[in-house]
Image 1 (cartoon, rainbow, N blue to C red):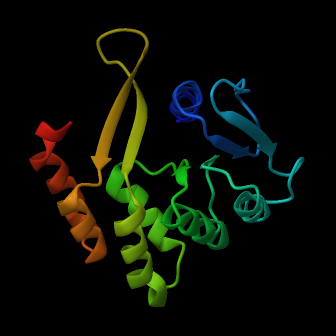
Image 2: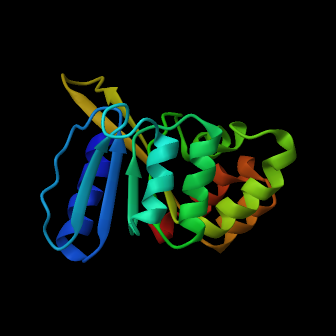
Length: 178
């Protein structure tokens, strides 16, 4: 997951003139400035918390926020706000499967907020990539299993209506989209 996030940052930095903020508890990749300016902040060292770092991102006028796994509601709320205001948000979660990832995000909020979160996700979400590394049965080594959810119209409607359980079926029907 970290390698995929790093590859996305590298691609953006090489192709866009944006300001990218990476936040993590441990900085694993240092991305040199190419076309984009890349700012690395280590949570607990450079900034006290994800929440405070994301709040600062609004003041620093960043275009992209990339984070490690965040498990507190306030930080997720700020990331949703960032996405709703036009920032590209790339973050990591560890559930197995795209629907489980969405369920994980929603579970951080009280049930009274679920409809609002469904609506925000339906408007802001572009994609979810779920990855799992497994041991190969036939030989030594490991293999990557990926599930990609592109937020097409059907996905956005399903999320808005809170029908996360429909996501796996939508993915199966949408295989031709990639």
